Image (cartoon, rainbow, N blue to C red; front, side, top):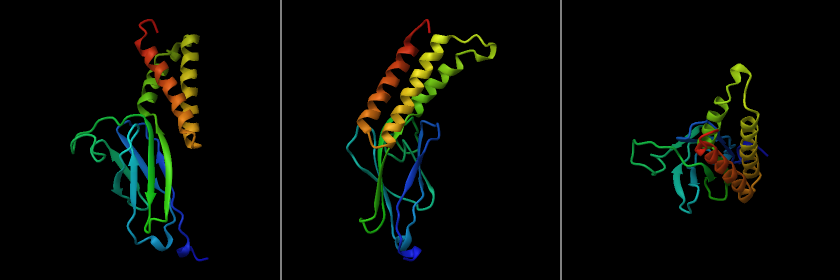
Length: 175
């Protein structure tokens, strides 16, 4: 079988650490549909509405609140953390790839602030605070792992617990 006969659609969502963007990198072998149009469908967390865009082959496709039609054109806000359901389709529609991605950038920024508050410079960090941070970090990693394995419900349970613990910590005045 010649390489031109082979079609293998694939993509990866890159974790950038920036809550304002979602980056989808094409890693497909387009074969005989290389010159045909392709699209990407994105369902935002908590939504059922499919948003459809042209997909640029062989490149990083960058999405933000403006081009996802969450905010007016040219205005940007953080994208909500949660599971993004993404489908890349080639032409004909018989070639497609589905993937769920758990965006955790906002939660991780809160976690990084907790890390930063440990005062590691002087070697006198609070053991309880350190354990709380490790627990939350583990929940986020477990959530990401679950979603990457297609276990969306379990992943969201872990993530919601992590966010709840982050919020409780941030509301605590003596922490």
